[in-house]
Image (cartoon, rainbow, N blue to C red; front, side, top):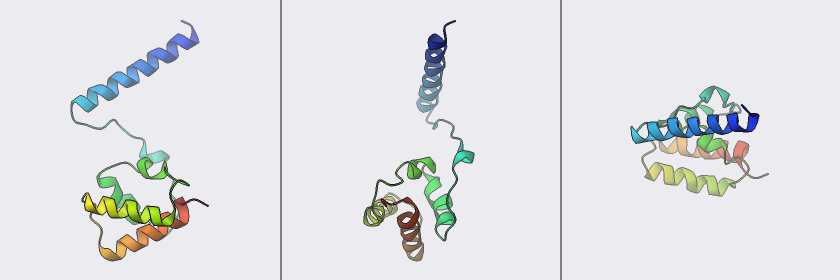
Length: 104
């Protein structure tokens, strides 16, 4: 089988599995082991509070995209959506995201 055709088959199978899981109300599996967060006071907060609703890759894919103030807005929105963060944790998380994931 030509190499190009085998890639399309793998892609089609991945889409089928993802669609099947979505139809069952389950998110597709993620490989959290690949996420390597920088050390800092907000790391543990990010790993625990943010992953109750989504994978860490949903956060780190925005590295370099937001300013610290924009991260503040994002965190505020997530709290409105139900992220369980205490007031002191919010500022620690915003500082962490601002330091390690903001535009340079």
